[in-house]
Every structure is written in structure tokens, then in C-alpha cells.
Image (cartoon, rainbow, N blue to C red):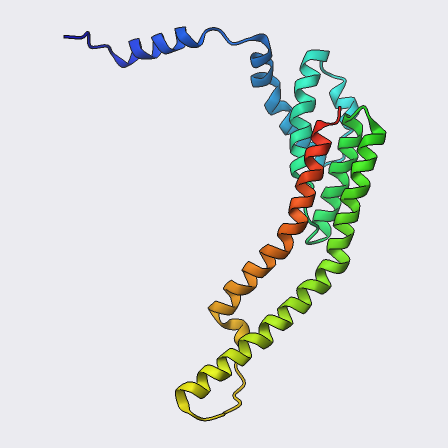
Length: 196
């Protein structure tokens, strides 16, 4: 019959198998959250990002930059409102400070700006057209359903916008239209992440 071990003994054995953390892992644990916190402060307040980074030694700075970089990239989004536009600009300005290859960064930024501008200018028109088209389609379907049930061709005014099926379909269409922009944006953000 086997030996029964306590939970503490099992945990100790697992820790021994894992071994001691490397210096790099310790740095990530210690400075990764600081980088994320610095990015959050930078996005919300007027903080000199370059000056804040100089407060750390080279090893810690690299880990902090990675943390800041990740948060700034996640904060570049489709501009649904003016606040998002401001955050996008600030995140892009911060990334420009962090990256060494300024030309490559600017090339990707120009493509990102093109996507964001297109979303604001053309995306709004496309959404409006799609909304009106969907609304007309739903009104016609409801009128047909009423005709089939009653046998009367009564042109009733129905507020289809309040119908749950209309709302669901509109949400699906919106997500599909925005998905194209989001996919492009994600692709460009990956390119930015790869730039030193």
C-alpha cells in the first residue's frame, strides 16, 4: 500500500520540481505591474513618460517598458466618442516614446490613423445605411406577418426598433461591420508590438 501524503508535502514536492525562479521572472513579477500602473497613470494624467522611465535601472526599465507597451497597445480602439480619440492619440504618443525605430512606428501609425479615420467618416455612413435598410426590411416582414394572420392589408405603423428581434439583428450587424475594422487594427497593433 502507498504512502499517504499531506497537502503540504505534495505542495513542497511540486515546488522542488519547479525550482527557483530566474532573475528575469523575478523582474517581471516585480516590475511588470509597475509598468502597467505607469501606463494607466500616463493615460489619465499629464505624466512625462520618458522621465518616469529614467528613474529605473536598465533591467527594470525593459520590463516596465514591456508592461507600458502592452497597456498602451490595448488602449488603441475604434473611436466611438471623443474620449476614445484622446486616449488613442495619447497611447500612440506614448508608444512613440517607447519605441526606438521611430520610422517603422510612424509607418504603422499612418495605417492605423487611416483605419480610424475611415471608421469615423465612412463607418458612420455605412452604419446608418445598414440601420435604415434593416428597419425597412423588418417593417415589411411584420406587415406581411400581420397580413397572413388577419387576411387584411392594414398598413399599421409599427415601431420595429423596439422589437427584440430587430435589436438582436442590429447588434449582430454592427458587430460584423466593426469586426472588419477591429481585425485590421489588431493586425497593426501586432506589428507595433514587434517593433523595438
